[in-house]
Amino acid sequence: MNVLLIIAGILAMGMLVICIISGIENRKLAVTHYQILSPKLPDCFQNCRLVVLADLHNASFGRDNQKLIQAIQEQKPDYILIAGDMIVGKPEQSTEVPAHLIRELAKQYPVYYAKGNHESRAARYPDTYGTLWQDYQEQIRGCVTWLDNEHIELTRGNASVFLYGLDLEMKYYKRFRRASMAPGYLKEKLGRPPSEGFRILLAHNPDYFPEYAEWGADLVLAGHLHGGMVRIPWLGGVISPMFLFFPKYDRGRYERDGHVMLLSGGLGNHTFKFRVNNLPELLVVELSNTEEKSKK
Image (tube, rainbow, N blue to C red; front, side, top):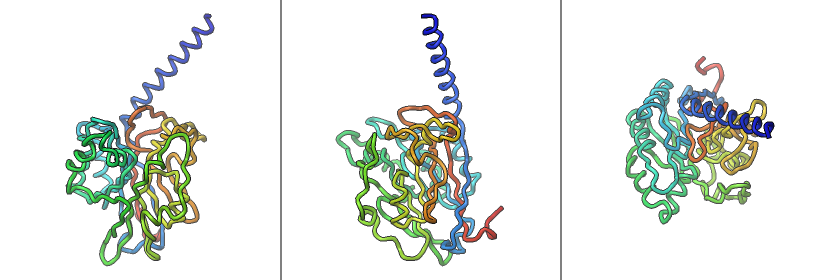
């Protein structure tokens, strides 16, 4: 009995330590810099900076997210790209935190937004989520360019790059398994990519990176995995939102046949608030067509 009590005490102490660490980590912010080198990038986009936000889930860093806003301002971005899940997709949840952040950022930068699964389900199922999606859209009306299976050309000087936003159907977010993506699905949703030019894809779910690469995305910007919540050295993230252990893609840079995916560890959490060895993450991406021209 004493042994069992000792074991129980150790476990309880361990959980307490994890909760304390998680509480501390959730209030910190990591800024991660990546450089994307591609000869397909026009000279006008040399040293163009993108700040990527994903998975805020109503989190706040300082009063009115001032710490996050300041961190973004310090990066001097040219564009703000949102890879989904800024809200918490639950009935009667407030959307004021992400809406306020976006309104403040839109005063200084162009903001482009592709849905995550939380935005998608709120938009698709108003019978369940009420006016959550409608209210959120109204709060940020005129502040963002929505990319719902659409694309635009980001133009600088006399050149441009292509920016796509993917809104996946909910079956691709089901728990406990990875649903197979039908051949031609991305062409049906996004169209055929242009034969020339650099193509950026905002795609919330990273599990389909092989399909994104095959479709023709030169750079994929994703989120959804929250870094695997708890990260173990040399093993990576422990669990995905689909309740799959040690997911293949969890956080960081991935490459496939010359195509690159940058996967954010996310800024917040929605149901389970644990983060261990996994700081909330702000991604900064610098574009360059030659290493010699890039900023040091």
